[in-house]
Length: 418
Image (cartoon, rainbow, N blue to C red; front, side):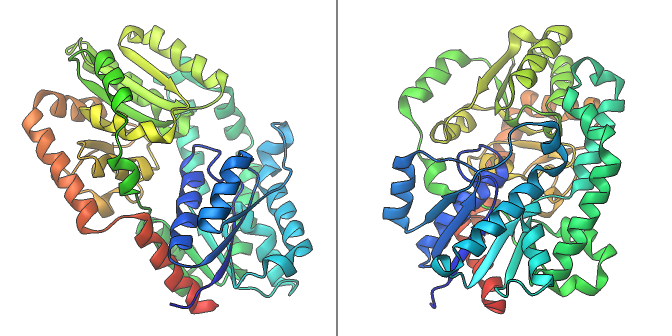
């Protein structure tokens, strides 16, 4: 197979714990294992030992560039600032990197697309879209307006809604520029492609679907000591597990309200939230749990290393992805591979992989009662949950939803334009 020189551009890479960060990291590893030369431009600062490992074992060259701090300006322009700095870095070291194709994530593609439009760069450009802005905005707006969640609303939610007219205009400008001047657009599910094609029918042939994946080797490795630690904490109680950012976009507060209804019947069930976020977000979750009267049943873990996550999955009786708009993230696929019964919202790409009541259970987005009822079914009926979990794992295996497949399908698209 002909080897390609690939440049991946993303503000987040490995050091951050979010889905985009881990997507780009796993994609880069898988591309390298397939024999391609990979360079990465990112904001994330990795330890020197990890950089050496990536370079020596996989031949991946990571370039970290200065980026914005958390300021009011960064709320509106941070992603565009990174895109501009990444472009300038590329132009400065273009002769050293010499990519056959540039693969840029989300808004980091903006200035690369602009430069292609004015013929400053000629390298083929592929843009990866991991989500659509309107979904995140509508989710934030709904949660700000939802009185049930008022006591736990983050200041960032209000800021996002107040700035939405500016963000919306910026998003439309960015999206139009990227779609016009990218040679290909890769989205992570058919739902996203359908929404884009409705507005940009003439560009339909540019837009390709490549699903996220999982790393079976990482998920098959269970840390024995940490496993025993979690078993002691569990103490024969049942676990409802949620993994992800503490922020509102992941639906954490909806899950906590749903859990209050559940815990009034099953007092021995624990809600385990293993995530990451700011001190403000963590303190808000604690405050909400106290208001709801579920603090003693809530276990919060922060910044759990990736090597321990499979242990969390395997100790969970039910896994919940409570995000109202982003229900087919990496964590959903990972939980399915670990044969956990998954509850997620009927939104986004979830119905493309999950068959309700067969390999997972779906609830109506933003519906606390429905979410609570679906979790209750799995807590009450262990045999049903086991069947759901086995079917979920078989789905991942049969469809080969791995990062290796993601990389191979990505390469096929890249070769169309290289």
